Image (tube, rainbow, N blue to C red; front, top):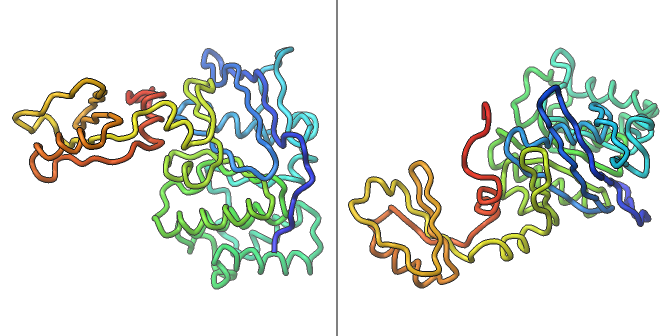
Length: 315
């Protein structure tokens, strides 16, 4: 259904030493990374890390600070000088809903197709194809204001695919959606990648990044603090298991951690990390029923260790 996009040998996206300041606020501070063809890369970070600013730079909605050492290229072109070229090859799903609420689903799609000079008959066929792909075929004549949040999000994805993009940029594509819609979008993202589409996404859902992305880039306070394959980052930087204890302050006595264990305590939760699952299991067995459990460590554990648990600014 969607055309293969092979044949590119160099990076689709190259970011090197990029800075951006808004007055005294430094949103980006020397960010650099690459995205290779037909890959799915996730950018993670707390609010205020600079993720959305960076994404907007890629499609020329935001300009970087000009410095001799900085470079930003998409398909080998600078977005500030080659905006239309890059947009012709890209699809963008923004954080905000920018659909026309007074128009129907079909009308929204048709108007967008005109931006790419798609012939009317081809656009009609493509719209039908994409709405079926996103399971919106029965909503073609519904007005946008009649759609649920999940339907609007799926429509934004469908709209971004009208021009058969080689690069799909998704800024928090599933925030606020129920699990069923989230998994449907995950499935569609996997399908697009299998067709050769390069995907760059930001997300606050660590399980989403782990499920979809072959590489993640963790940002904090405008800088890249870590990047790599999720499973490799977890194994290289964390213990294998965690004992998660809920409401530790309500427990009269807690078994003390043994040598080789690491304790992370915040608010109303305690986490004890170790490579020895059996030792953690023995500790859990001495806790009141339902107050703790042992699990493998995950990307969220790594994210919180790297970026911290304290909220920044107005989060």
